[in-house]
Image 1 (cartoon, rainbow, N blue to C red):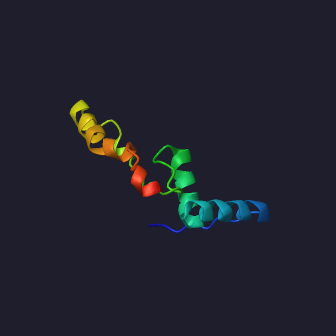
Image 2 (image 1 turned 135 degrees about the horizontal axis):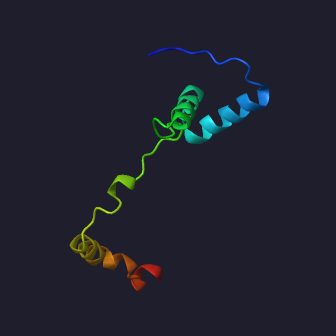
Image 3 (image 1 turned 135 degrees about the vertical axis):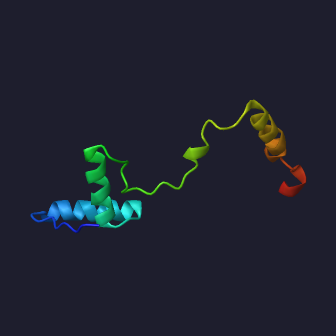
Length: 84
C-alpha cells in the first residue's frame, strides 16, 4: 500500500469529511479512499459500511416465502389476555 498526502483541504471541507465519517462510522481516510475508488470507477463507495441483508434479496423461492409467512403468521395475532 502506498501513502499519499492530500494538502490544501480547507476547514469547511475537513469538517464535512469528519461529519460524514462520524455518520457512517468510518475513518476519514477510509471515506476519502472510497470516494477516490468510486470516482475512478474501480469500486463501490467504501465510506459507508454495508452490514445489511442486500445479499439475500431475490434469493427466496416461492416455497421459502410461503414457509416464512406460515411460520410468522402467529406474530400478527393479539393475545387479549395479556392486555388486561
